[in-house]
Image 1 (cartoon, rainbow, N blue to C red):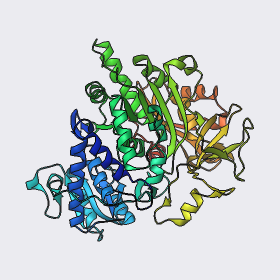
Image 2 (cartoon, one colour):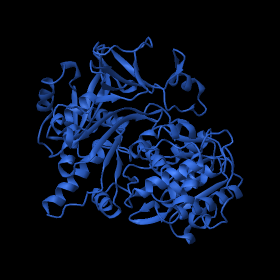
Image 3 (spheres, rainbow, N blue to C red):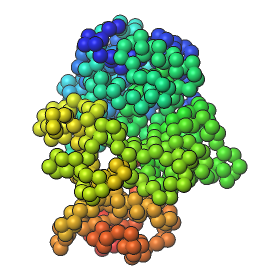
Image 4 (cartoon, rainbow, N blue to C red):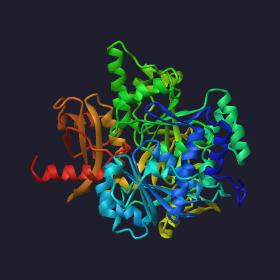
Length: 552
């Protein structure tokens, strides 16, 4: 198939890869069961027919309310085949939140896991645009009459291939931590443009035609070094979702876990069984249980076989240096801590490996190398001078989304034109060091203004997690009559009662200015995080306020 505008489309690229690799290479693996490229493409084509039969087509929005599994990439591929638009939905959303996403995205179809049926039942009546609801899993006899079973939908005749465009869209909904979630509109051209780092290690460039995609996949396959990506983070989150698009585009394999909650033992077992080369994860939230699993296995004299693993990729939250070092003690791979967001990927990175072990102790998780297309602008839109100590906003110029769906005002604010060039400025603040590296301060929307001084939660969280007694923490600002806002923390300890509030704050005072030290610390048995491992600052703030109201 051709591109109507000369730009490659992901579905067209994947069809070419499937034609080339056929049954010789796996495209998807679930708990060690491989689905070859020929089957992956065939099932997606059959799902596409079901979508067509229900009136969907170009620009139709298809919501994915799914856990990780083969169904996620198959439904996404089927959607791309029609030139329709997949939209991710957090599987923790309740009926109210689900209805908001379906209405906001103009969704005409919804793929959903059968365990989420109650939420779908409640939300669907509020979404008149819905034409099709596809149920994943569960017994067919228990399925409601308003749904179609996924496996039945995948038995239709395969849809014909069509010409497509690089301007077709993919929606990535933000987490909604500072308001209602918004759909970031990525076109296929910019998604492919962001894959340069995937192809470069193979000595390849990003393909621009179907024939190039097929030939590139064949050359990489012939080396037996294609990426086998284990999606520890959910595919509905950009940390796994965006690299997953790249992995498929070079003919690699996506692997997912079976357990609905993160199981590090299952992860390492699958690394050994599937010869996984890359894991996509989210900082300490995943790294800590991964380390604990490795420690247990080593202590029992039954270490996991990690020999295939080349790369750990983390994004979205802090990945502490001491945890990276401990993981590298088990296996000398490369750890890529990537700084980006739904609005801009690959803005900066921190690379850690055993070859750089002598530097590990001096590195902090907030120091990053800027990518080629990233700059730091002050509030006057001038570049921050290295070594000046001035704070500025991170901005990237490539790859770039189109903007936010249905929100031109927010689009103009986040994607401004500066000196004739369009930039993405999601809101992360940083300083630029003399050597050109940056020190990440945090998201401006989370910045705490206490007595006129700015405190970035990430800085204090990193320091707290550097203490042996602390397993995890969140830092937030709470209303304060004297200071406007006061710094407060929710802390999970490795051993309950091993350290108190006064001692913890005393240790912090030796590391940072007094105004940055929490004025209140609340200890919890377990810190609440999202499925992707991101901090739930709303919950942290509510926990602190509840603790204050009950006098504890």
